Length: 329
Image 1 (cartoon, rainbow, N blue to C red):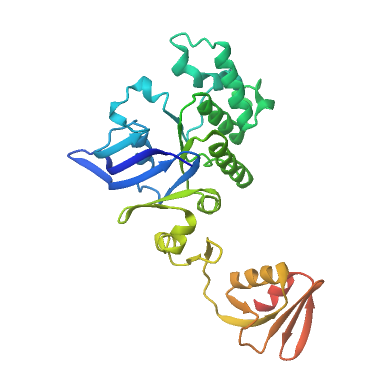
Image 2 (image 1 turned 120 degrees about the vertical axis):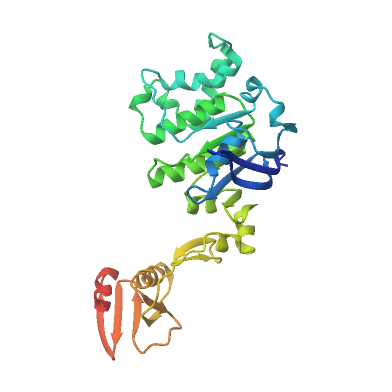
C-alpha cells in the first residue's frame, strides 16, 4: 500500500511584495503518496512554481504546515533536506565538458563530503540510476552534445542518484516534442512504481496528465487547489468546471477535452469503425454535425474504399476525406 509521504495542512504560499506580502494561494490541505505520479495543473501565473518552491523549501511558506515523512519541513536542516528532496528544474543546465556519468555523479554530493570523491558504493548508485532511466548508451557522451530529451533524462537520473524519497519536477516536458513528452511522462510513471518514490511535477501537458497521472492537483485562483484521481475529478465535474472556456468542452465519456465547434448544418452518416469516427471528426472541424441519427435528407455512406456523398438523390464518390470536404466549402 502506498504511504503518505507528504502531508500539507492549511498551507499559504506567496512572496514579499513592495509594501506587503503577496499571497498566491491559501488553505491548501492535501496528501502526496509514495509510488504515485502526481501532476500539478493550472493556468500561467496561478502559482504552480511558487507552490513547488515552497514544497522544496526554496522559499518560506506564509502559513500552515508541510510534513515530509512525518517531520515538519522547517525542522529539517539543509543537509537533511538534500537527502529527502531532489528537484529537477525547467531550465536547461548550462554545463559543458562533463560526461553524463559525471553529471549524474553530482547527485551523490549529499553523501560524498567536500571533495565529492565517489566511493564504489556511490558509483554503483550512479550506474543503477543511469540504468533505471535507460540511458546506458549515453554514459560517456558530453552533456553539450545531448538533445533536450536526453538531457532531461540525465537530470532525472541525477535526481535518482541523490536517493531521496521525494522528487519534484518543474515542467519536465517543456522543451520536448510530443513523442518525447509521452516518453518522459511514461518514464516518470514507471519510476514511481519501480522505486516507490513520491514523484510530483507541474505541467501544462493536460492531455498527457489526464491519461498517465495517478493523481491531479488543479490549482485555481478562486477555487484554490482540488486534488484527486483524474477519473474522480471527471465524475464530480471538477475537470469540466476547472477548464471551462468558450470553444472547449470536457468529454466525460473519454475523460479528455475536445474543441467544441459551432455547427451550421447537419448530415446523416452511415457506416462504422475508425473511418466513420475520422469522418465525423473532420466534419465537426468545419462546422458540420455528422451522426448516424442526424435529421437530414443529405447523407454520407462510409465504404471500405471511399465515401459516397448523397445530395438531392445524386451520389458522388470520393476516395479521401479531404476531397469530400470540398463539397461543403
